[in-house]
Length: 275
Image: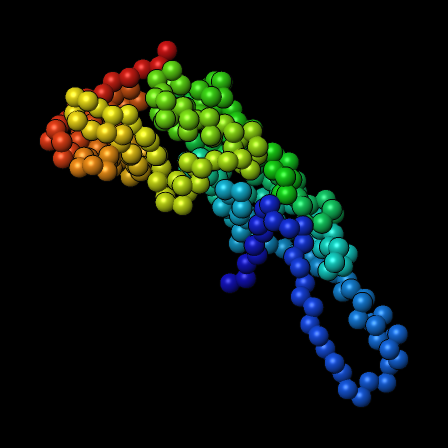
């Protein structure tokens, strides 16, 4: 089935390969031949796309529909029209946001549309909102929430499910990395987020040594099986490994179960509330 693809953040136009051609028996004079070869193709296209226009890049994976008019030349195309969102998601710092609104508008200025995209994800006590504006080559990302919270508080609840006041030192480092990436419109050095996207892991943590248990620095990686079930694997690389299950019963109450090489098996009920 026919489809189209648009990748954000790429070159303004694709490079057109030059093919060496030699014609025999040509009666056209060399100067005329050179002019004919240099003349670019002109475009006059009307594209109706009821679906299957795939837009990706900068963390965006989505499907759109719309109507576009293309004129100009292959070297300098002029595109007018608009694409409207059908479905999609946006990834930020390893967390997926569902797109709730989207317009991509072309105003005759080449392949660099204006963006108006809104994506949301649930957090404890509300909803986190990412708004993507700017252009395809230079997207501008802003962060907010409903009800309104400070940006670092929203990110802490989104990434760690906890208030910023309860974060460990390694979690604070990851939070600072996410904020830096946001402030640079996704072009910053977000090492943790890159690792999460490459591995498919939802959360990466570094836990300090536990003298009572006899463990060293512990590295943990976890994934949400569903919205309420979270599984995490931990290891210190020196004999300690554990698998932790967390089942959220309500926003404030959850059950934790741990299977570990040190300390055996244990279960607990966790209650928390942010004020």
